[in-house]
Image (cartoon, rainbow, N blue to C red; front, side):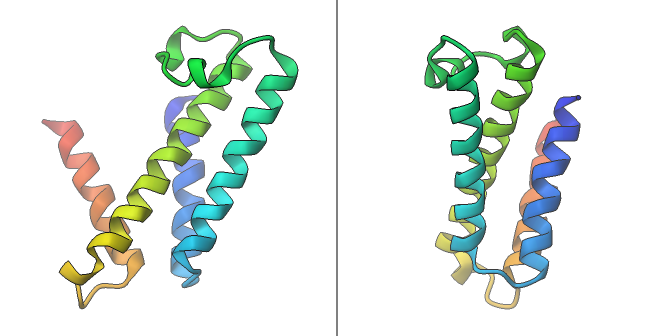
Length: 115
C-alpha cells in the first residue's frame, strides 16, 4: 500500500462526511477513534513506543504493516488539523460550505507540492 492510497482513503472518508453535511466534530471524532484504534493495535503487537514512532519518517519504519498504520495516523492527524482550521476560519468564507472550504485546502496543498 502506498502513501497516496492511504491519503485517498482518509480524504475520501472526510469528503464523504462533509458532502453529507455531517458535523465537523463528528468527523473529527471518527478520525480520533481511528487513530486510537491504530495506536492500540501497534502497541499490542509491537514492543515499541508508538508516540516515538510518530516522529520518525514512515519510510524508515519496519515492518510494513506498522509503517502503514503510522502513515494512516499521520494522515488522520493532518485532516483533523485541517478541519479545525476550517472551523476557526469559516467567517473568512461566508458563502462557502465546509465541503468547499476543505476542497480549497486540498487545492492549496496540491499547489504547494508543485512548487
